Amino acid sequence: MTKALEDYLEEVHVLILQKGKARVRDVAHDLNVKMPSVVKALAELKKLGLVNQEPYGDIELTAKGRRIAASVLGRHTLLKAFLMKLNVPEEQADNDACLMEHILSATTLDRIRDFVEGGGARAKEKSDKNKETK
Ligand code: FE2
Image (spheres, protein in one colour):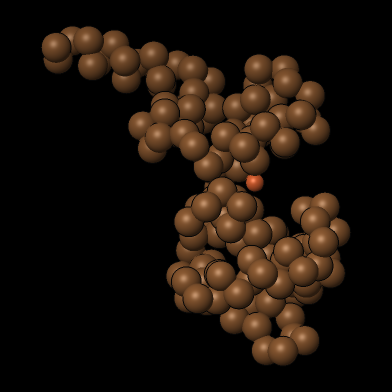
């Protein structure tokens, strides 16, 4: 899935969490895109079996769509927390997290999670352990 589609999926998930429903106009507003772009992205997400939408109805996530959206949002939240630990201002951290969430490897995300959760101590422990076993 492309970065753009992941962002649409994530936004639908966030709107459902925050407002209980996701409408095309709210997605367009929050992502700062035009409504036809949202409609086009939704058609692709529908083809992938990730969203459902009755004509003119609210956007709904399928179980698979929800699983993927939650994973993207989880990465977003983690990366934002990481950047804020580095004293990046919140808005910048939010924007950059939304770019990084699509490209970092699972290994790097794993190390970042250790760093954020353990304040760096656990990540260091792990790398020391790796060195020992080499
Ligand atoms: Fe994001």
